[in-house]
Length: 143
Image (cartoon, rainbow, N blue to C red; front, side, top):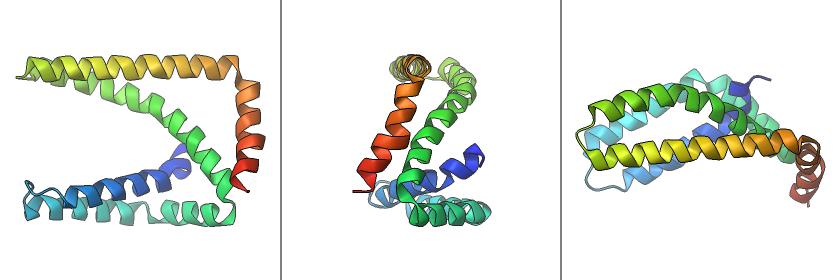
């Protein structure tokens, strides 16, 4: 199973919740809300086989699938930081607001350092963490 197969369903669930919340904003026009829904529907159609397989895995063995989601989000966060850092640095350079630039930089540095600390802890305590995920958490979720 690839990383995309592993995290497609939770990403689309989170995206759907965000889309529902955006529909309650009164300051956005109906045009923008419709475009958000159209883009979401396009990606649902594009990733439908992966979403369906993820749903079937979730229904078949939900504790193992939830553990897989947690591990997959950790893996993909590394690639997220790799892609977002250069984009945000260009964004910070062209930003008209110094406050938003400072806030963006602070948030990204904090997220990166937090990822590094969690990754170091995972490498250092990998046996204990794998034991927790594969035995303790699965046992807790099946109760």
